[in-house]
Image (cartoon, rainbow, N blue to C red; front, side, top):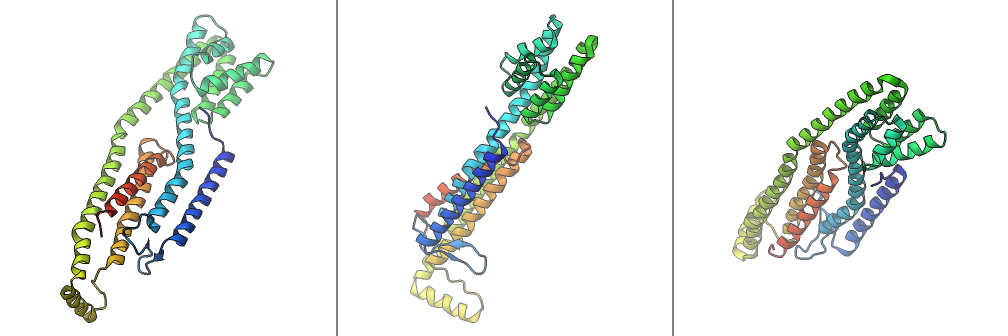
Length: 309
């Protein structure tokens, strides 16, 4: 498990933007693409065509989100692994020193117990120390390398315990108690907030169902009514008496379907980020939910388009 650095993230984000722009260009070229002048909604004239402009844009958004979501979630998992392993790592150090080991040796032994990134970075620190590097500087560099807000504090605690001499046990014991409480709080928080993720998925499902019901039960019948000559004449007369026309043809059906589709995509995108911010305390980590929800919305509208219009 590795933390993806800023340079790699920048390249990946730039590639995502380029990919989305290319897909958007393809949508403009191979579809009868237009912007509605009233609501600026991208759509195409044929609602039965799989390669509609709106669907291509959604596919481009999914492709652009893939590397972004992967990087965000990978870094989130790395930081969570650091956070989970810090309390156990300190407990192992405390147990080692209580059993008679010197602090550097206790850190080495604790690093062998499989504490993920924490073991790796502090193992490197102890290797530096064995070659004559300053102990305090070694552990502080390890804390900075872990990139978690707790890690530099742990490094300071270990460094101060090394300098505390006879009070080393008291320093380590109080820090173990403190981080144990933080771990319990974090687990309790995750348990209590996890249902909010399910709430976001349920809200998207409800919106999709309502959208399909509105399209199939209200908008499609209007296009059928418009196909009848008598109904068409009556609607045309009404339209001539008013500023806005209520006639709906196949092009309008594609337009209204696009409105619901893009509304579902936007709700999926921001809903996933909100779920990540609430549950994981990271909007970037929620992009994995956005990716799943946008894909579900796209699949639902693709299959629904076979039966609409």
